[in-house]
Length: 495
Image 1 (cartoon, rainbow, N blue to C red):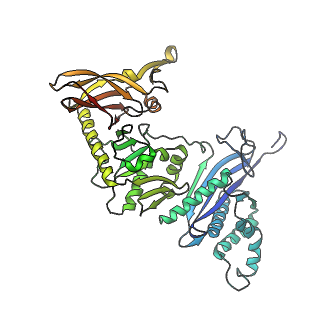
Image 2: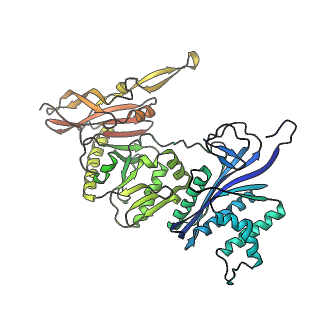
Image 3: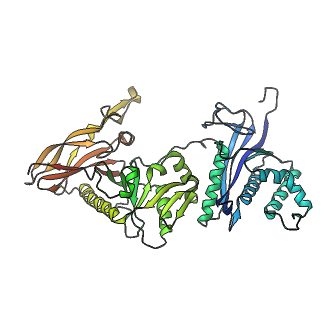
């Protein structure tokens, strides 16, 4: 802390967490990662938006308030070691990259926090004996990783001349300590990069403000837990007017292997979105690379995992470098978490049933969009779901659209009177029951989509002379979605 009579320390210092990783054992494909921050020894004027406290010795867990230091920038970096290597080699590489970064930023000192005693002892003690012995052991053989240690020693000499101070603190690995866990995550991303033959190092330096903000900005129409898609070139990904096509669905996770089976409480949607979703494009591209020109069946992306705030943020930041392509099993894994993100649907014959169902749904979606009233009949139900609300007073008052209070969290179904075309081509009205999160999106999604001009339409079409099917179309801000409980939307009508 400084007082009014003290001169603030405006020098830049650093705290860096380092880690190395290797798979399948301590010898194999290795990768390194570093995470940390540059700071000044000046009390922060505001909080950081993080649940831990930054100090001159690293993160202080389970602490809140304003730090006694001012964080200037954060660093996240990782890379893969080429060829067969070791965990220790990755640990030393992380140390080297950390020192190089701090010196390039003009830092006066760095506190390294690492779970590698090999790195700490090597830099603080052993290295000085190794240089005396010309980097050889008692048997006259070069020590392990001698080329890396030579670089580390060169940096040690440079730091001694410039007055740059290097300190270490050992941290227990995998103990839940934020900095160590983040460095471990990055090191694993480095390993994944190596498996994917991507050896360019990644360096991200970000201003402190907003660093901990993990808000997601994906389209809220993507509310189903799964996306169904294909990487085959003949399968269209955009509509004639340039909107991006997404097929999504909801079913129980333990029933996913039976995708395509007619399960009554499942839900399907076809989305035409103005903007694509870069993270989902990246997943699709990774699966296409995996196929390498061979046939690939229907693919299932786990949106519930991909769009989680932390996962979405990491995939946005580091892209496919985190992903492990398991070609034999046609699966895509997030390496650091071992979380399955995408896989090929099996058995394929059931998956083709799903394709048939989606194809039929899309035909009626197209009929609606083109205004083909001979095939579909419509009922505007916007007013059942949404209402206009005036916010503010006098000249500051403005009208907004919001979800009606009657669409409450406990609501399971909505009863509506729907128009339909009779066998004699006259228009009739029939009562339908729409199930939340099946025939229409869930309440949270409906609320998030609320905007001026939103339109919700109930669409019916003839299944036979005595039965109809129905779906809900939502249109807002240039996007459109066709939503249906496709295996439970059959309604018997009078012939």
